[in-house]
Image (cartoon, rainbow, N blue to C red; front, side, top):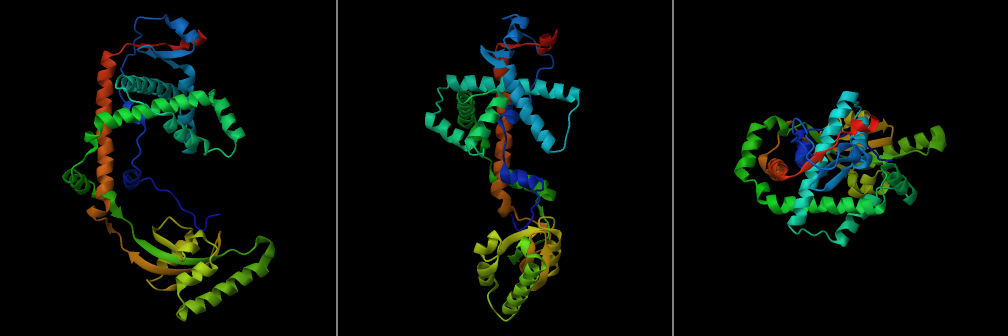
Length: 348
């Protein structure tokens, strides 16, 4: 159990820090208004084979689309969102077009002679496998996705090849001059406002649940004793290392800087009520009993450019790559033979 409750807040700043862009987002935004099937295999025969599209001979199956759809829908459910049937149909169209884009990029990676080693694939596969608590859980997930290990590794190989292609073709695109980063910073200063923050240390004691009131009283008495020692000059960080039950104990109880809304409410109220160097009384939260010392306070204000410069450059670089890839895929589409098959024929 963690000793404090942290709430994630989605802001431009978190986007700048994380800077994550999926291939689907990079290349999946261009979609022709009226998808047309090119000459080739009759639509009904393709549907019978479970095909949604064929891109220069590279088949995209219904199962691939279903897997992508499942992933999107699970993320929407976790976010508390739901799509209408019309919304789901629109999402499915976008997923198909995204898969077409990725197929085009993969085919170009083959033309460019880009190689993905077995070792690279295994390394990525191991990272995926680690997300599952057991082999049974992993196999169940594969079954639900109608995939096997070989298919997973092939998807990894294709994905890595596309990423290498993008890195090869658009590395210079991501090189953002400091002047451009500064211009972005100056024109988006609302996104770089830092809320009031405090830096605090604490000592946490967690009474044994089976100990009842006696255990709670013992924890309170121990904290009172430790508070007296701290007030008498004993180093608070040392006391935290020796007595705190929070993982932060190894750092002398240091929780770093945090704004309001990050910690359990009673803890937050007590920490912000203090002045630098002051100790709180005993604070009770769902995690146990705390003794808090405020170390520093930062007022609300604009984060200096130097602190965020590299994050801004990284963000703008990825945005530039995103636009470059989108333009490149548009050109690849114009030169490709793309067949799309109407899946409503499955039911007709």
